[in-house]
Length: 341
Figure 1 (cartoon, rainbow, N blue to C red):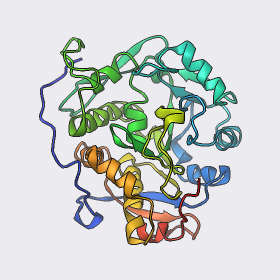
Figure 2 (figure 1 turned 90 degrees about the horizontal axis):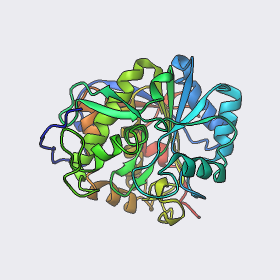
Figure 3 (figure 1 turned 60 degrees about the vertical axis):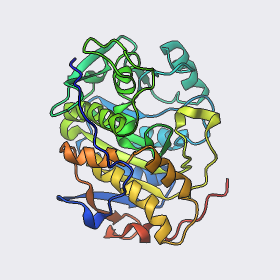
Figure 4 (figure 1 turned 180 degrees about the vertical axis):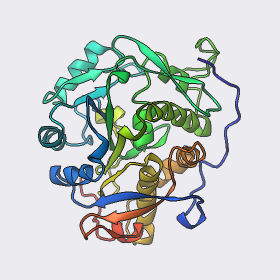
């Protein structure tokens, strides 16, 4: 591993509207159907390249986490569409109920992730994957089991995040595939070339953190190539990540729907746009999430993914509930209702 002395950008608190973004467009599919059927419908649009030994990268949450993707939805998806798939996770960097494999496995049982195999991919250490074109890293440490898989469905609960501003597909992979004691350390703390910490445990924040998360993600998605796809579930969106469990802040943002894409930058950009569009649609409830994203400079995740060639931050949103007709973000959220607890 080599860690470089780099300078982060400074635009992560500035929202860039679609008409000010450059580059090509990707397709993002959208359904308002927040159910197992809706999840399967969204996945079907991106399922063509998912074969062989399949990993489902899912944030399974801390014990009794109230906002995680419903287990019954994932169980039905696995049973009907991916019967041989394995959910993959890594141990956490922070101390808690998932920082060792033994504690992590117990938490999985408590939360009901028992309907298919779950692989803690860093249980036996880590391997390093190259980061092509990164300015912070040459390689990233991921769970040693990760290369054993042929393809990966990134199944993400889109929500806020204490440090990242928001947690979409980028955070799910960049933090969630990084090994707990190595990769996550490199991302979250200032370290030397040999991995020794010389800054505080959580010393990395704002643009530098977003860029390091994104470079970590790039290592994994470059490894899988065309055999990684993305489904984001916009439901029970607190400003808190599922890593906060029962301590998560209350949900106030309206539920929106489920999105799917083969482009990670496009799908996370679409989710952010849907949150911003709530204001134009006359909805209330997005203020706290918008503030969380901008105050942490989380929008740098989107622009840096685009700069690194990981995907397009321009996209066409296709409405699965209306014959795949193109739909604007404001129209997509116009029919949602405020969260009622």
